[in-house]
Image 1 (tube, rainbow, N blue to C red):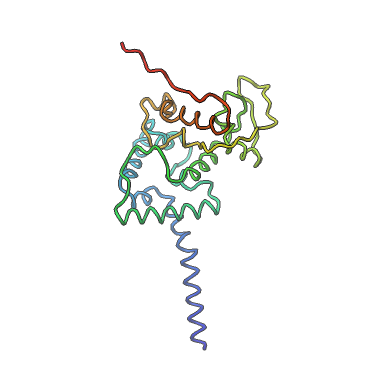
Image 2: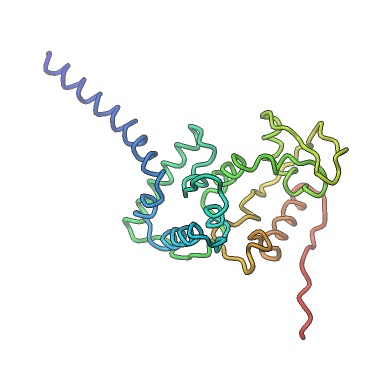
Length: 236
């Protein structure tokens, strides 16, 4: 009887180690970019190369690598890929890591480097909000493409402070109007897409990313123009 109890205690201990120890261990390993790319080939290896180039003094080939060049503190892949760091997003991140490991082991990874979409836009947008909430909370029409996103309203309701734009200090900073749209930060700010003259245009592809997102948002909220485009340059 005692042997059976000891066996049950040992099995319970092993269960706890597997349930909590492995996720904690993986979470710590994910803090290192070198660990992240160990289970990835292309395109993640290319993203890592771009980050290293940015750290050497380059401005960054895309938005993701630009973060390495501009961040005040050490930047890592996981900073964008774990959402807000809360329990729900932590669980989602671990599940995503398990899925990525399976993709790696089966050799079915998508080698496309210029990624225009992400598998988990919710996680990515939550990570954006963690660092850029102040941008979302600047009021006024000139920033409506930020302050009318659902994330802006959520950040305000969570205690964020609304601020007036520098050129309109008398703007109303007492409230935000909630809008319902599926447009996320990453619909305009594509992290792993190279944009010609990226540093000049803040890595935004106006024609192929920003304007389509604007139109989608306008259609979903029932306000704003639904025909946006940049006229092509006249031939010289």
